[in-house]
Length: 418
Ligand SMILES: *Cc1c(COP(=O)(O)O)cnc(C)c1O
Image (cartoon, rainbow, N blue to C red; front, side):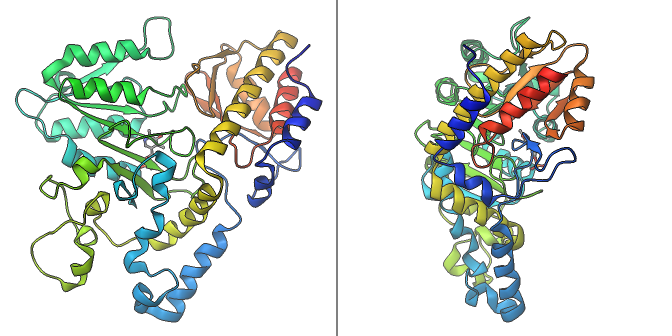
């Protein structure tokens, strides 16, 4: 008995408690079918239909109130970031530990100003080789900024020979070996290429045991997997909101700073007026007094128009909760894996190898071997929106808010016909 069939997909959709949410998103139309088979929610999440209303609200307040929208708008812009306290629930944090501001790469630099403060003895950074390019450039420029050579200061870890993903024990061993030279462990939460979900708790503990800071780029983790950043004692994290969190191209970024740091006003940071003690922000005085918590890292007044899009999405996350999303995300992912395995068995032309380990979120990455690019082009021509990563990986991420089991089934039918 196959583990997948059209009937099974239909049953799974009919019994899906989140099935109504699909109609709350715009699914792009296809050339060969009514709706695309959209599997790139890990890259740019689709638009919630409510976004327009949320943005319109801010346009109306701007139109009707001008500058007074800061205090008299429906959602006063002066304290706009407070509308995003629910973001903390998405990443398992306390509300003061999270703030929404800027873009991801900018925030990584701001966080490293506070959390990478190397000394002559302790200056090394451990990160994964093949990290997302922006993260590589952030780390490269940070160590150079502090006067170090990249090859000396940065320890890039690789999976074992012949393996595609990391073993936690190998990362822990590297942390122990770096010992009191290690200033910072900086890893992704979920690896963008392989989809591996790292054991953040264990890695953080290992970093702390040698006296280092543990920071994570959660771009592919936020809104995708269940995070407990506070309980795991993670020092800092940041993520973008336009991937799994559906907040639009170039959307704002979320930042987590554990309360043990966030409530230390003496922790060095780059400051701006929006992070200043809120009750005195408009007194325009000298002398920076940070707001407690992550809010004390804000620099500029909130980019309200893009944040309004995020607000629309965040309200949906709040309504559903991460638990339900993770349960469905896992089911979609396992169904996708079965569909790929069965298509492979039915079609000798496919030479796919799934490289995503068991610890994962929604994403599956597969090596495609020789005919990978032609497979990818065939899928694209048939309105499968996946993505191609050199040299030969196809990434697919069915997401719980708007993907259906039928999307995956139909993808499998296309694979069989390749
Ligand atoms: C998507 C992504 C980014 C993108 O950074 P922006 O500053 O939002 O352009 C950075 N790092 C990782 C790991 C990502 O997945």
